[in-house]
Length: 187
Image (cartoon, rainbow, N blue to C red; front, side):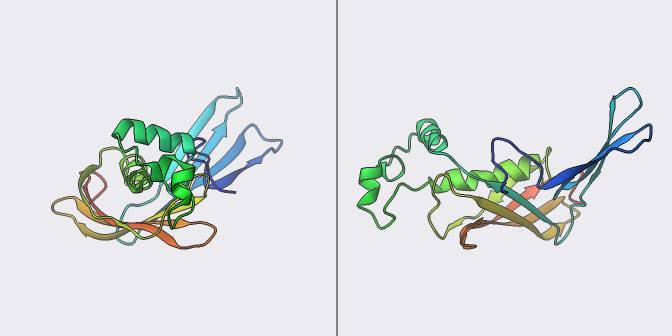
């Protein structure tokens, strides 16, 4: 089952172990690390998180989808009201046959993930290349894969390849290289 961008559920489902012991253990895994939530005798959670190492060839995956409401909101915020994105009748006359998502809306997943998950908070974007290879559509499951391609430890700078794939077809829709700086994680 794919994660919905609005629910942010873990990529790997957790398992609860209820034993006749004074502690219950809930294991919650993510591609970005592993968290253990242990409930003590009084029921209070104790969280232990083991983050994934950020280094050369490290990989992070993020599943998502966009709704038509997301497309309308993006058009409102950016002013890009191209009917190719908003008008089904207009889009039906194009080679795509239906409205497509703004390319930059799809690519916005790059900054979301790199700024909040991998490497995460404290990341400073220095540059981004983008190739829009195929159209993206609403209510379609996508997965973004991020792979660390190079690291300059002295400058705390990394280059990360990002690729968005349509989950059903496996085809890459968007590809780009992000250059970012992170003083603590890019070493």
